[in-house]
Length: 143
Image (cartoon, rainbow, N blue to C red; front, side, top):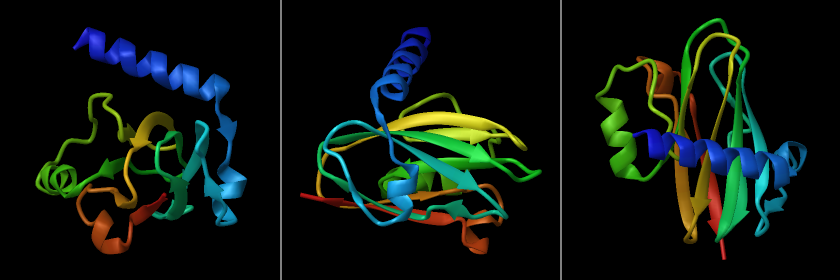
């Protein structure tokens, strides 16, 4: 586990330092990548802002997740298997793994994800009631 945590911290630190800040572009609907990019996802009123991104296949995206709400949230990005596992869980905090980060009230977290193949990858907050409230989004991955 310490090796995994160290690797995640090293990669995220590298991406944050060398990536392009793309939060404004992401909100404008621009296609991001293929160079590494950093995207800020704001959590406001139990919503993801932005809630849709478009990236090129092969892009590594570092996500800075800023929770502006007075309650816990999570950012879980991945395939159906990942979301199914989180739908039935009740953990407020997750270990640092690519595509997942938990944030407490008014906190900021970071994670990263490599978008390998074209398609759609969903993200959500699976804390009780948050998906039903609309706390979901997607990343469209284009060739």
